[in-house]
Length: 400
Image (cartoon, rainbow, N blue to C red; front, top):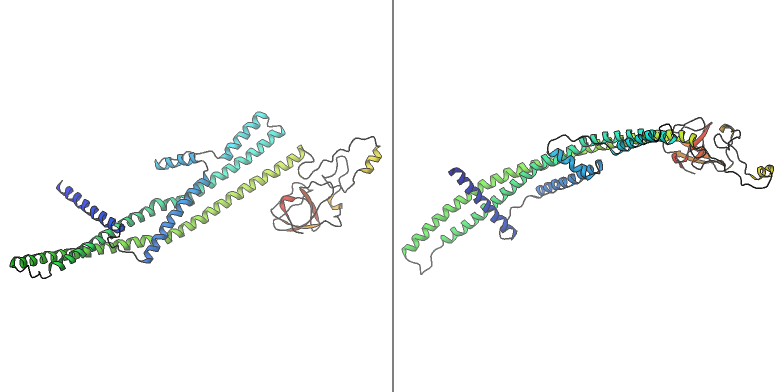
């Protein structure tokens, strides 16, 4: 018990001394040991790394999980060391609703069949999102979180210890300075009025006491300086390790970009497959409005004879799938391009032809395109060598 009381009293004395030194430094009444410029730069870089790592971590969590309530729930599970329950993604939930709607509204109807197809695509998108979240959490969020909860806490602890060592050092310097000033004052010769032997004896005794005090302060200063130098070296090594942290975070960032690229590529493929499925089915359900087919408008009713009506209607070349119903469709190879109006176009994405009337495309290739009277504006005729076929406008970049 006595030992604990002595230790408590000693700790209280040290804390009081540090508090006094800190307060006097704030009011400019005490000198402060300054760190070298390189050390200050290391401290500034460490603080900047910590601040931006926190911001990147929080915003990435928002990107992966936009629902704040879900993020709070996952945070509590992690703090309680419990497994986070599996959560259905928004795409998977939408797929479930669409599948249930198709089952109730009729899976054999055109609307029901389309719902089923879209539901399958949304389910695949949800699964891809789940894989992306899992991969990004392991390869990117976990290293950032480990730095903040591990390395940075160690750095902060050593920095606080260095601050205490510096306050102890400066307190020892102040104590030595006061002791030397008192010793110098005690060694001065008494004035002419103080000529009694007693004054000389007291002056010599005080000088000896202050001399012992100076020796004690110098010894404490040497110990404080050694502890400060040792702690500064430990802190410096930890701060220099921030460079290794940057290298590790750089590798994690590359892995995050790779996982995000894979995720968006999967989404693109799934949606492209769905678009092709819907395009082929919708062309059969709604002729003239999908897949480049057009339904000619009926001529206005009038009292003119059929011969007159036929003579007044515009006549243009008919392409397979583009002409009015009942007319004989011409093969694309038999359709000559217009004398003017052809343009060069660059293909933006790969495109697989849905049938023989379409032209398969490869990204970045150049083809010649033109339009024919009566064509859907979303489609053009494309030529590549001796091959012709319909091509979607959204896949092209018209050059000239």
